[in-house]
Image 1: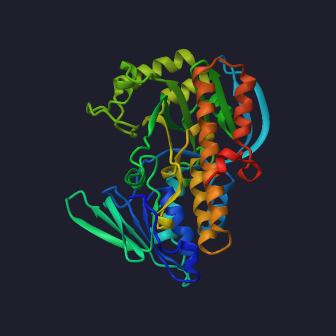
Image 2 (image 1 turned 60 degrees about the horizontal axis):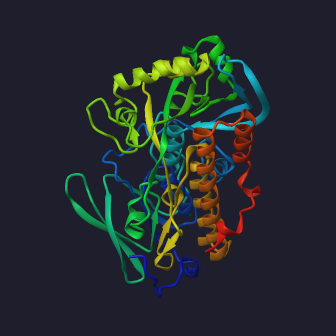
Image 3 (image 1 turned 90 degrees about the vertical axis):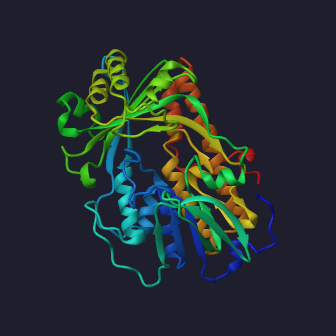
Length: 438
């Protein structure tokens, strides 16, 4: 399917109003929809989930510069979107601070980001926020759930996308350009690049939250306005505050969010156990909140009390709905196909390891940069070099950080340096030549 086309590229459309079909209705698809809608183009999002709203897709997000810029450009809801941290600190096994440095970072929740985007994209009201007034100059925004994409093909100057529903209904949607924003297990990418596989890295992220008021005083002190870490061989855990129920940022009602990386070798009984849910279903990538096997989680609680500083052990043991994500790698060789009629965005282009704290930022950056290209602000070459350069460079950084964190016994200073390098603003990064070859 990934063959060249004689049709003109998107940037050659000039001021023509376009219809973009976006596959994937999570943050990447919504970010792209918002950016293109604001230019006056029509967009249709095809989301495979049978429910009209996504739920429990994640917990905390480190809101980097590109994420904040996306909301600055396209969010018209007047409410706080993040909780600020003013310090990074590292604990030893006893729970004492052994390193600290002042660094302002902003943390939000997946749920709040999602509902803010839905309010701005297609007018979905929720307890998180009110719906802003429509802007007459914006393009039409359509969100269709329960649409599993099965194939696509060129049709005249456009592209037709075929889908089916969970009830077996089949149909299609035609547009000028197809955007694959359907995550690291992207169907669009599989159709284009069947040889590109998402591969397990050898460890998982155990995740969860605890309401701030339910934590002990010493634990609240460790994580309130702090981004806190602990390292030991084969283990890394971090935690920070995020907005709470319905996006509240009121002290006491916020959530302490943790990400706990620990090794589960591929094919091991331990991996099989942690990835098998309470109903006996072996999950491939994620065991969602609420379906964790209680016996498997009780083992992790016991290990947490043995391995972790007391503040971290408390939040791991206290979370009521833990979930597990297998840490994986995937990288697509290019970001456009059929001479620009098909484009990959965010995780569909490159699935980063979470150490990079760059997945949401990548989606925001890709969406904004693509909109700049479509509007003629930058050239096609510049768009491709920046997008692909970021994807390749940060993908490699994530792999390197994962190897160093999970499989090498390094002094703490090495991990601190890795983290600090990962926090360099994207616009200050200098990509090596290998990353930007197109």
